[in-house]
Length: 463
Image (cartoon, rainbow, N blue to C red):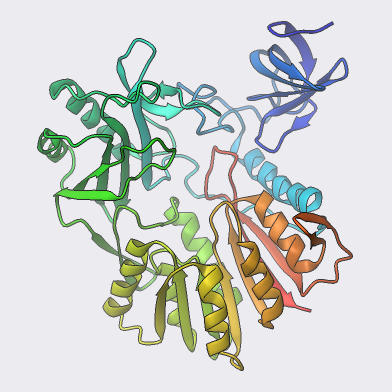
């Protein structure tokens, strides 16, 4: 009988949805991170329940050809990257299969999925850094990344998927903690101050936010330390004293700099603040937006609705080509950025609406009834709100484009739109596929190399 803490030798059969190895041994299916199909490995059993087990790799006895040497010293301990042990072409194949499998298992959809579009920079691609600050078991302040499925911080001095500026910022925060005797926040004891450091690079300029549970009289000292490493930056202090997993609190204090920075992409001048959403991989974002534009605006006489529109960059690109464009975004700061973007670029045919998509979409549909309507949706990981799905089915819009960062919720939403899933009460059940829309194309993009995440662009047409 096998049990917890036992060391097992077995062969990995496949990859799970999180990129972990799937190993079947003595009637139990084990999920073991950092294993590749075909590899003979030794692993330690961490947990077994109801025929499902979890393990930790101890040794790779027979490596697969696709195995790569991880660049990060905390790989397998940090919860950020899960695929650094895999050669990059194999990562792309895994993500294509992940999208295809999710569509079939969750949405009941069997469709052709194009090969995942690569990132030209498999490492050092992220333009945003987001790191927790806290305390270890001994009470020492630490900065790093959370371990998988926990709030235990793995101390980290650098990160392979971030550019060099991230290392400089970590050094600056560490120096501030030491010189100004500031403590990390203890989630268990509800004591201490520093909770997160968040930074975004925009055109060589930096938006930096230090999140604290308490006001910091020494925040000016941190600004002086940052000046030694960053030429142009804005520094915010955000106060978040709530017992929550949400990073930012409501209160932002501008400590240094202008607070917003402007840059240009594909002929559009835009600006962003500390809460503005932008895709973290600028190179892949450019490829993805180009494809979305081509799929949405063909003749120039379309009226386009950009739902979950963020800071308005894609909305503005659409406005350059379409008859009229509406951007709907809940976050006030992002919507305000979109308004300023509209003015900077002279886009009189662009209208920004701050509100819930599920509340504002039907108003726009009613206003533009009779026009050649097109819709782009770029929802959060939770997917498209169910009321929005219902509105789309009833709308009569001929073409939809969905940009999704979560294959599971994408599969659910596509299932409902195509009729492969039907809603009965609070449950989703298999349908006959006689829904309002049919899938034209599915194109994954590797927005997040070295991680289990993948972005997808799906084009649909009215049946």
